[in-house]
Image (cartoon, rainbow, N blue to C red; front, side):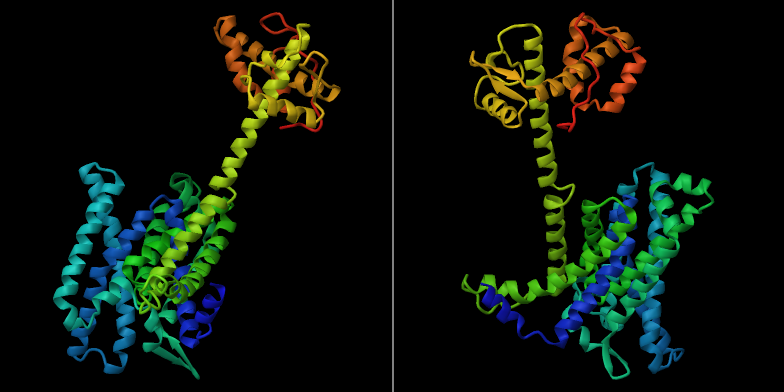
Length: 467
C-alpha cells in the first residue's frame, strides 16, 4: 500500500505545488476571521456570509459588464475592476446580512440564529436566481462559484516577473496579510469584543465597530476564496481549523497560531488525499477509472479528520478525558478502601475484605487491595484480611480527616440531621485539598471531634499525595 501511495505521488508537478499553495493560503486567510466567529459563537454567520455574498458577487460582475459596455472601463482594466467590484459587493452584502439579521431579531423578537436562518436562505436564494438568470451575460460559471476550481488555478495566472502566479493565490494572499496584520495590531480589541462586548465598551473599545469591520473582512475573504474552494466549502475553512485548535489549547495567542498551522496542514493533506486515495480505494473495488478527486472537497475532509483526531486524542479529547476520569474513579475507590480500613482498625474490629463498604466482594475489591499492597499502603494479615502500613496510615488519616472536617462544617452551617452528614462528606472528601483543609480548620476553630463524637485525625498531609 505504501509503495502504491508513493508511486501516485511521484508524478507531482508544479500544478500540484500551486494547488497546495493556493489551498493553504486560502485556508489560512479564511481561518483567521473564522476563529473570531467561533469565539463569538457566531459560526453560522460565516456560513451565511459565504452564501449571502453570492448576490453581491453577481451584481458586482453585472455592474462591471454594464460599465464596460458603456465605455466607462477600458478593456485592459476590466479584470482589475472586476476584482475590486467583487470585494465591494461582498462587503456590502456582508453589512446588509448583519443589519437585516439584527433588524429582524429586534422586530420579531426572535433569537439571532433564527433571524440569521431567515435572512441567509432568502439572500442566497436570490443570489441563485440572479446567477441562473444572468450567468451568461456576466460570464459566471455557477459550478465555479459553488464548488471552486482549485485544480485549474494556473488557467488564470498573473505574471510576476518570470513567474506565472495563480490569481486566486495572489488575492487570498493579500487578504491573508490584511487579516493577519489586523489580528496582530488589534488583538486586544478583538479579544475584548469577542468575549465581553460590554466590558470592551467600558474599556473604550467600540465593540460594534469591531463587529462590523470583522463582518466586512470575513465577507471580503469569503469572496476571494470563491475562486479556489467555492462558496459551499468556505464554511469548513472558516470554522473547522479554529474549532480544532480550540481542542488543543485555550491560550488565545497559541490558538491563533495553531489555527493557521491546522489550516495549512489541511490544504496539504487534502490535496495529497485527493491525489492518492481514490485510486488506492476505488481500484481494488473495480473502478480503476477513478484516479483522483476534488482537492477542494478533500481539503474539507482533511480538516474534518484533523478535528476528529484532536477531539479524540487532544489534551481535552475523549481519550485523555476518559483516562483522567478513570484515574479519578480509581483514586476515589482507593481512598474509600483506605478510609474503610482505617475506620475498621479504629474500631478494633477484625480487618476483613468483607467490611469494605466501597466495593462489593469480587474482582474489583481484590484488585484494589492488591494495588494498595503493591504500593506499600496495606498488607495481608494472618486473619485473611488487610491492615494498613505506616505509609497507609498517613494516607488513610488524611482521607478520614477530610471526611470528618466536612461533616463538622455541614453541621455548623446547615440544619441537617446527623445521619444525613455522612453521605455528603463521603462524596466531597476526595476533592478537599490541603488549602481547603486549612480553611475548614480555621473556620471550625480546629475541632477535635466530628458531629458523631469521633476523633478527627491530626493534620499530617501525605507525601507524596496519591491524588
